[in-house]
Image (cartoon, one colour):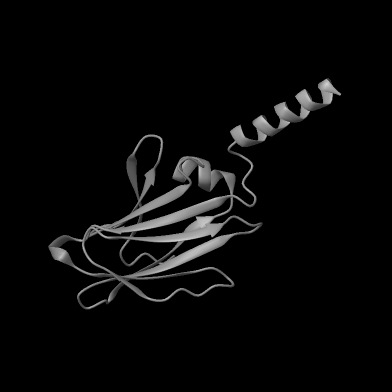
Length: 142
């Protein structure tokens, strides 16, 4: 009986320490407005089942999208740069693949893909290193 308990304890600890088990984990997408001259950013994100409302982010503010990872989770966002909102970017903000989560976002800790919107485009933060990578430029056809 003791061996069985030890076995289940080891399995339980292993599961919580492995980042590659993605299913049914809580995750966030954060989008931060870093546009110059205090420009407002209009944001609209959605997945195949859920529509969000349009958000207007002031300079230095962050919009947070919380969700649970299911098979085939895909969340995409549309961004418009103020004040006239003619500059547009549509991009996949989250794709349930290990390459996307581990290589681009930088893993499951702290369970967030952090996107920063600047005048030249949309940057993604690699969490372990803290570095930003330009992923989409304004006017990209995504």
